[in-house]
Length: 374
Length: 207
Image 1 (cartoon, helix red, strand yellow):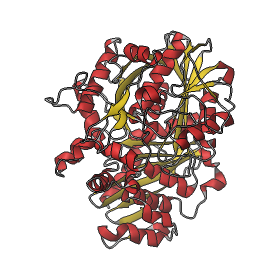
Image 2: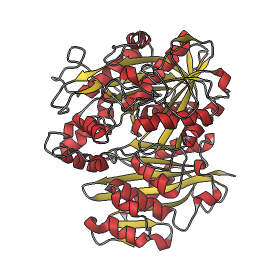
Image 3: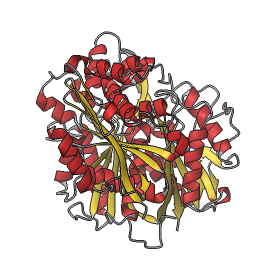
Image 4: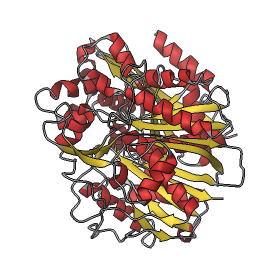
């Protein structure tokens, strides 16, 4: 069992600029998803979680909007620690699916543009802002990026290659991403309803979230105790029909954590709100023997924040553990999935010490991690 | 003593397919035709190839050469073989094409290729590999990242064998450097160490 410690975190979303603000908003059942009319992004109104100008960033800045969000998130997370990116024992891991992709929408093609849009350029800019001493690492693995970034950090810390890791997940909304999910007919016509029988798609969301991990065990707080991934080898843009591959990742993560299902307080699922994703997950959790463990999705609060999803949802997951609560799965009135799962319907208390976070994504990839209260 | 070793490799560079398997070496006539010519040479008979973007085609060809005349699934369960990739330009070639399609009608068949890890997905589908996959964005092939990461995967038992390496496609330039890493006690195979991998990579890149 691994014992990598969470020592600080931050969430910047339209629900708030700190973990506490976001956590309180989620507990209060708030959603950042609203109907947006913005012809620059879409000819028709759409539902998404987007920053407004008031809580957003300056355009007169050497950093893009996405980079400013990362910098603010890292600054806030690190302010509560004595960890510094300037330390050679600290690694910065950036998780993003599309980074600054919006730059290519209108600008003429040039070497300079291609450089600026690359995720390594973005990561180096952010690392430089913090005078980072180690080369930043960039993970871009579709919707499991954030969970894979945490698993990668865990392994590098376990192996003693670094002592601390600053893992930041980020994505912002662009016409590029929105039109892509729209042309796949994957965007919900209202606030998403994960696991509900009337669910009809996702909402995109903007977010930057940071978790600071350390190999120095304090015996307090939260530890990341297991993580595993798997591939479907089935389809690049549709999930597995059986869920057996996600199930295997879940079982591997549980085995690594030396836990049985009684120790699990709840599962924070990927729960995008598409018909096929939620169906696949329900089969996976049943196949993993977790039919009795409450499941929820945080997507109705934040939307699908892509590269940030695994990070922001992990933060909410382990803060729920610390508070001893299980959050309800918002907007699921009548579950409509064929796998036998227990969708969490209301906020309840729990004394169990661990929680599972899962993710699945394009390319047919799955990942699962386990957090435990010390 | 069993140590992580590099069992074989295959690369794509300068319109050439390069491999330690002498039957898997091929020179194309030019960049425009290389991917299709190499597909013909490898005799893959895999119609999905034509639907893929160039990054995935490059990955598929390099994996085809790497795993030619071998069936990993005779030795390992599907879940025991993982894929670890790194790339510089990610899906930018397809991103630009998709952005162009947005001006008229956004193309779903292009959009699904606007993620770099889809290349790992295509390899996994082609070869039936269901182990863990991860995709890193790096400016150059970073041997130390690959050895650090893959050694951990194997040491933890997350996978027993890993297809690891570099793949890139941009401005009509296809590049790949794939190798297979697993525990072996045979000294016929080089150790999975960053200096050894770097030397191998450099020797191919200079050829």
